[in-house]
Figure 1 (cartoon, rainbow, N blue to C red):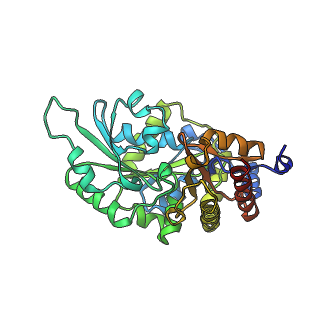
Figure 2: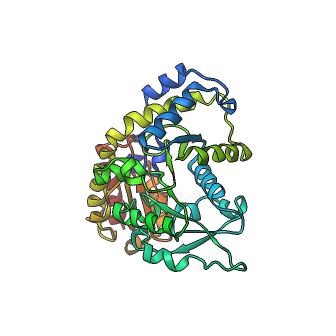
Figure 3: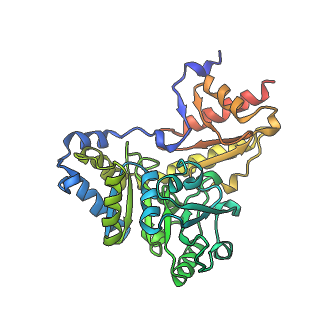
Length: 351
């Protein structure tokens, strides 16, 4: 058995595995609570007000998950039988159990985009003509950063052009901004600058920001009022949810300040992995906290690589037959990155 098997685990499967900080745990224990279904939980109300303030929106809604937040946006903006234009490898298409179809009654209309970055020229041909027997376009959805494309970031001008043209065509645009704070750090811009032209924005508290549970949906007051009804319909009324919102407040205020460390660690990880024979990876493409690389030339599949690394107490995920994904977060330090590279090198060169 490798010596690393007795070392502490390094969990790079996702930034969702982060554990709440001591400050979050204290805030949770001391949280003032009420019944949020009645709108009476003061801590939830503070979190929603602060999220709306940061994103310069009229209102925000605390939801159990990013998937629910995206689904609420779809069913609020679009009607059953409509289409949602989105990138082919977007999270909403690949990892949300086809909920836009199963629950909202909408169909995804997808297009493959380099690096996951859609442009208006890709979207415009997919917009349905106003013919009564054709499914109509109900919504455009973008993802920033794009998970399956290695945390790629939308250039602000590209996103703004899409929103401007969509609005001129009478269409709404929703942003799956699960990792929008990572995009903001990478670009050196504020989240409200990056999202101001979108009609609604979902972002996660439970990924790189480190809260144990929850996401936020932001938009106009009318949109959020409708989304609140939809949240209850889906079983998302969480009663004394202030114990969760308290951690979200800490995450929202404190965690964006240290996301740059995750990006630095991701670049260090990418540069180290790229030096290992048999691994195909372009470090310059790693701009946030997600590293995806091809192990096909090692003679092993991604599942085999991940299984062997797990025996060495390093956890990561297979994204395809030969693609492995590693995601950095605040629970993995520089030493953990270096150990991961060393173990991968030992694994690949051992044959």
